[in-house]
Image 1 (cartoon, one colour):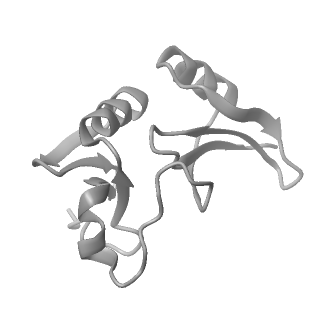
Image 2 (cartoon, one colour; image 1 turned 30 degrees about the vertical axis):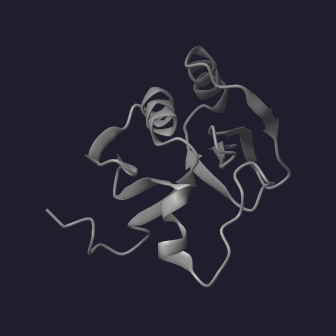
Image 3 (cartoon, one colour; image 1 turned 90 degrees about the vertical axis):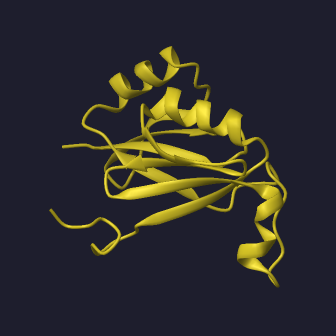
Length: 132
């Protein structure tokens, strides 16, 4: 088996969160992901070959200085997309987990059916189904 930390592609994403416990619970409830590490300032969950580090925003300067750390919920700067086979069924499942949609499901001109939602800190997620 290939070590996911050495495989090509994105291996880790760090999200700066206001409340690690709230973020951890949300990610586990919404995505049913495995918690692979946790300490007082972070929780790390596993998405296939990518880990998502939910790091307390108070710890962010140590990673990014001299760049500034943006405030949570200060506006969209990026969106993560998860490919799904059935956007409508996935949206129904997300709603059953307490997720409120920002938009969608919508048929997009580039051949995708998408729906967008946010985590507790405003990080945007999208599910996308390729249309025939």
